Length: 176
Image 1 (cartoon, helix red, strand yellow):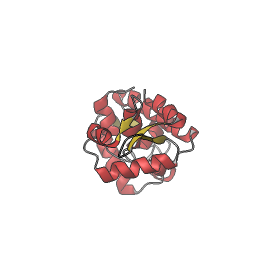
Image 2 (cartoon, helix red, strand yellow):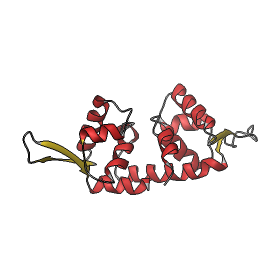
Image 3 (cartoon, rainbow, N blue to C red):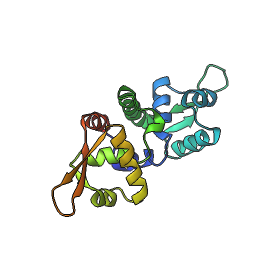
Image 4 (cartoon, one colour):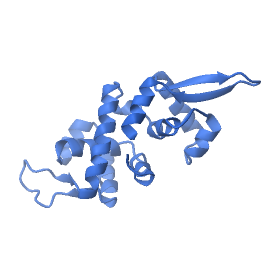
């Protein structure tokens, strides 16, 4: 598991985990190859690589120049992060979850619910700065992909409580 600060950086962008996983798996890559493999726009890839470089996890290959040499490689600090991202992406693939199927807040929700089932408001508070709408949409999406279950506590009014399903727990195991 990586620390909370690095996890927050990784979830700050939709493509950071897939880019890091690809770089870890391929042991570096060229810009054009990442565009084709990951299916994102040039600007999104450039912004992701820029953020990862500012974190010190990715660097332009100083030996680049030959067509077969990777243009971007992981730094020593990025190797651990890359291994983590590779594990998360492998679990997502095993569960049949493609990159676009999970929102930015899906992994933080999985991480939080791995500790205990929670109501909406405490979950929102723990995941600040998530908006209520973003969290609601994320939970609906996760309910439809069978990562989260919702049960109603027998009160008046009934209180919904969210928890992880078996599929959600397997994704949570990849985070720790």
